[in-house]
Length: 85
Image: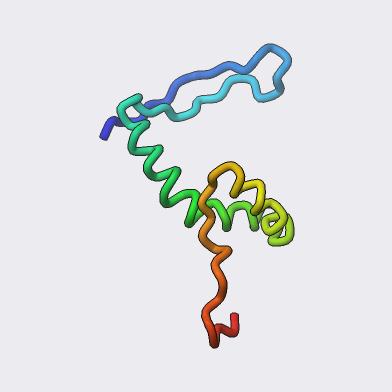
């Protein structure tokens, strides 16, 4: 795996963020990132993130939009029988 590096980025003149030093990764890492993003992130981490940020109701309302975008959210499965949660 390639090492990440810091670089300096300056936003446009009137942007209050000014100059920041984000991380950058070599382009050969992009294929690994895509596998993680479209696998583990969308199905495991993204649902919880949206619920924490916007609430469970907004998350449920957004499920059709996510589905139309091809986002594979897994926590909308039907509960098992005898599942009291």
